[in-house]
Length: 416
Length: 92
Ligand SMILES: Cc1cc2nc3c(=O)[nH]c(=O)nc-3n(C[C@H](O)[C@H](O)[C@H](O)COP(=O)(O)OP(=O)(O)OC[C@H]3O[C@@H](n4cnc5c(N)ncnc54)[C@H](O)[C@@H]3O)c2cc1C
Ligand SMILES: [Zn+2]
Image 1 (cartoon, each protein chain N blue to C red):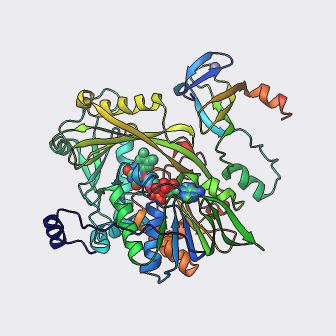
Image 2 (image 1 turned 180 degrees about the horizontal axis):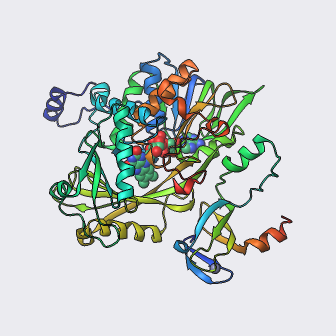
Image 3 (image 1 turned 45 degrees about the vertical axis):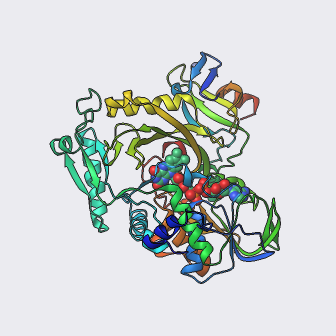
């Protein structure tokens, strides 16, 4: 069913009892041309574009939990393309452009809100670094604005401008950036993929990868063996574990990131604000809750829960930036397990095994990448060729000495 | 709880006092080792779900490098050994 104002009225008049499920509860067939492991945003987007753009119809997405139970439903929903490096910026801008057409493309309200993302700076050196980043964005045709302190004070009056250690001197603004409703992105892609014939199989965990004379022939799952022509990994924080099933050696560590939401308030925060003095970021959801997060917990972790010390640290950073936050109650906190890669940038590539494809290393920035990641991954799987904007994101970049290290932190995942 | 580490020299301390360097099971190759051996050492990680050995440096305490035997799923810390002792015991 296509959604429209008419369909809403019609369903309202029939008591909202006639809505159809958004995707079928598919049972696995014995063989697929392509199997994608992981029903997160990236796996579902890849399935959607495979079927829609590249004509590969016999596709299954296998998800061990329910759709949206991974990081796609756990993130702080920020979408932006204010990256600096030439290997990253065109890729994230491609994603931003796909976001801008996504609701029309999917006939689904993903609640894209281009409210603007502003990154604050606190010193002359940081201002210069942001000017450089803004210029790098302009060179790729992406608009960026430097906002000086006085102008910023008018825009965002409630910040702590005169903090003794981290006074706020200004910020770098990308107006087209903002937020999107994370679950809706997964649901919209799932519905779109389903309509193009993709089987979405939930509660189906891949437990082993079967290979014959080198090539992958299928996967063992909690619903039995399923054969495939090509196998694609999009397992977010569990990539090392899934990769191990095919003896892949990967440049990945799993780390945990927490997020928080407060009680609902009247509209007060109009932008996404990122605190350059630490790593705090905050926005207000459409329901009114303030959604925020900060840094990873610091050590490798597969637990989908964080530690209290980091929660405390996040609150401290938040209150340093917005003193009024101390009066707001936190309703919930949660955590997600992410692949931290060795240079902080993602990997979309073929693997040493010919029919095995890899999509991983999204660190804590992969939600914004969902459309481009899906598109480029589908391109790779269908054509066996890297999409031009993902060329710098290949697996062999470490061996060749072409790391895409946005933070300049070197091969230490917990610093990216 | 991995947010508290018992330093063998300083006692129970919050994780904020430590700099975490990651995998301590890796052995640095000899300078003349192959590019592949160096690549694996610098970039490739086993990343187990379960027990793992890690370097934690007690930067805001005794400044010693420690080897922490920790479970990455339960966050339980099984042991903390001084780095020099660990190296000696493991013939490094
Ligand atoms: C707290 C938090 C905040 C974040 N904030 C942002 C943000 O503001 N902006 C941004 O751009 N990014 C953000 N991110 C990062 C972003 O959420 C992720 O990079 C991105 O969602 C990962 O891709 P995915 O959606 O496909 O992953 P997931 O949704 O995690 O999908 C992977 C799926 O694979 C499944 N799986 C794993 N192993 C198996 C198996 N063996 N068999 C079957 N299925 C399996 C998992 O169950 C999971 O559903 C944040 C992450 C976290 C944790
Ligand atoms: Zn100590």
